[in-house]
Image (cartoon, rainbow, N blue to C red; front, side):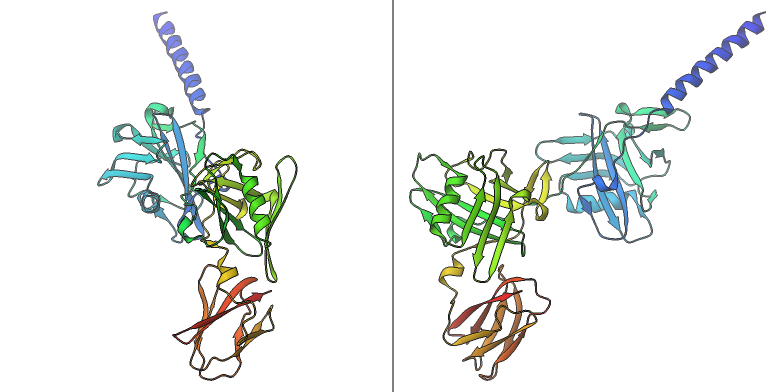
Length: 400
């Protein structure tokens, strides 16, 4: 009778353990799809996802890493991330991890006691050290603190972490311009701000104006845009009465730059504004920039920045000749080529884009017309400068 009771008790305990382990195995490791990764590091046809689940607070963050090798170690992946993302770092003693850190100025996360750290590859634990364990295309690796994980396999010491994984946003700095570089100022007063538009069509280019106003004046972004439009005939915008932008256009010669309102948003000092532009106020030293989010970098939820260098617009009014008597370009606009004609003997001819980058440069030995190839250039506005060392002349070139 005793043996029967003992055996029955053993069977009950085993059944309960089976139910317990079945329940644990029902827990699944939280991961993230490759298409949801926002920050990809490295180049190559292979890719892996790297995730860390910190314990205090319980936060899971993910990066993507691309590579061309057949496989990489976990340490390789961590080194690639640490090399380009200053927010992430780790410390190890040989093959043993000591700590993992993430600090973006708001979140300050650490996984500092290696004795509590564990990792899984595709949800499965590995007994290899992180400098030995290899990853292949499509894998994901996750580090976590066992205190905030769920033990799903006591025998093999397998933990999973159920905290929803958030994608780390990439690092990017919004391109700005110092007010001292602005050439076209609108308005009067002791206060000033800079207004810029990053156009996406027909090419990624950013133009900026300066705006002055009286101290204490209640000025909105719309007021700034209205005054610029009244002063500069090249600039125009359309919007609804409710303050929703329809488009911004900038017409310079034969080229029209367009920012469509459907894809447009604006920042004030690099931070997205949630006010309509007829409500958003500006103050002294503000920097306001409109841009198409399709050519911006998302650095936080619905916060984009634009990295295209900012060009002051009035350089195109004051320092570039529209009708230079001694130089001629034809055809202009050009498609595959244009001919430059004028007094050029011994001069250097330079073709630059709106960012000042040199596209073509050569020396002319005589005054014969020269052919400038434009095939393959992006549609937009360029500048052709002829310089003999003592003086220079510049004409606009439009490429279709």
